[in-house]
Image (cartoon, rainbow, N blue to C red; front, top):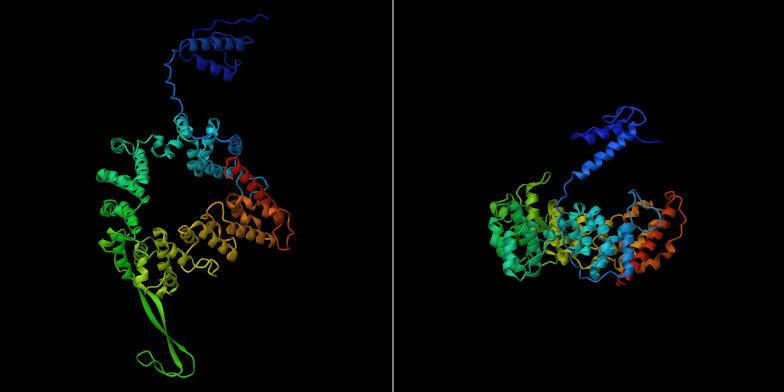
Length: 565
């Protein structure tokens, strides 16, 4: 059959849109211009579309060639060992499964191993293979917790890629200064120029870098423009002084106490109170001491029959003895004067809090902890914490001491407030919550921290230990690892509801020392289920322990591949 087509009228400006509309409606309902309905209409439509396509392309003017991007920067770090590079590709290829209560199956969760792999690779100083950078940036894009380690490992080429792909722009925001190269910190002119002319993120990066290297130089640089900075910028810059905080920072921080911004004043006061020798700490000590004192109470105990009034001088009638007991008496401040506000005390109490207790807690929190041994008869922190507190002030006083111990990094007071981990109250005399206990533990050394949490688990089980385990160094020390495994085993043998321990089991997969894997082989079998056990609990426990063992052995292989066994 010979194909013929009718002549096509010269198309107008909207000719292409008309042809598209005809194709969508169909030639039976609408034909191309100059074409009669019938069997030749579809062929005419295709011919018209071909002609219009040539016309549209021929009418385009060549665009100016875009400037080619600069070459990616070099990464001077050593390359990953081949086995580690293959492992990284597997970890990045894994995708998290659907969330739900209680993960099932014995296969390791590779997405949870990626942060640990990155930590080891960064510690060893390796550079990533270029071909994995897109997948690494995609993984970091979906997980904010992964970004710091992922961007450190990705190095300068990740920032180069981020400037070319809008999906990865988070890398520029997450990197101080947006990846801009900082001047040599010993080049005073360049440092001063960037500080005066740079973007805010660049200035923050510069101040942080300088503070970590030469704290005094960073503080002096900040002082040159302090009076002209915006309040929100002053707050961010002041916060950078936390690193390397020392007595030499006191004059600058004292000046900041008179700042126009309440938030800046509060931050300056907090930093000064972390310096026990500062003038602000001394002023707070005087105020706090006026609120706390020893009260010697006498309590009469009947030891034999007989009655009678106490004889002056402390003696009693026969058959009756008097015992003197020391207690802490509290008299909270009745007002928040301007001097207290200048030193960082917030006058307005939150909803549900009494003003006097609110002011009192802030004074005690900011006072040097050494104040209390002098004020309370030379007693040690443990003896002070053991004293009763009159009139229901114990919770407020101990909570303030907890905050002070964390702020001042005072291990002796933290030990006293934590108490014995096996105490019946499951947390010591001073800690008011699991969050407080976790913060107090953070002031102790890694070994002591692990030992305390192990004792807590041995005495109280795992039901309250999840938050405490989160502050322990990884991998867990041997006593802590054994305490966790023993507690899980006890829960399994008791037929406990297994899904309630899935969080601790997940922590164990990431934090237990891989050398413990061999000790767990005896727990891989399905246990006999007690009559009151949850249905199917035995099979779940067997799967969970199998996954734990498999994950530990995989972590050991990862460390060996990275040369960190």
